[in-house]
Image (tube, rainbow, N blue to C red; front, side):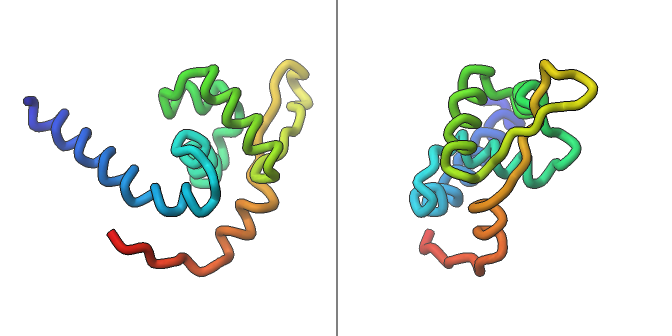
Length: 108
């Protein structure tokens, strides 16, 4: 196998393994967690199309998971004043509370 592809695959597997305990604790699927972390770490990217374009997550998965994150209080939607067809997603509530809690140490 191509060494660069193998490195990328192993990195993704390690990332998912490290995130799994937190996703279970928060009762979130990996994709929802990835969207939440993307929005929290990249405040200039706020729309679903940003998530699709930058993170390469399929649009239907972004839609379903953003709806879930809004319902569960992790995100809120806000209309874009310049273009009423667009909606920004902003991290709120549970995500901020979680960010302020000390991280639990999970065994590997």
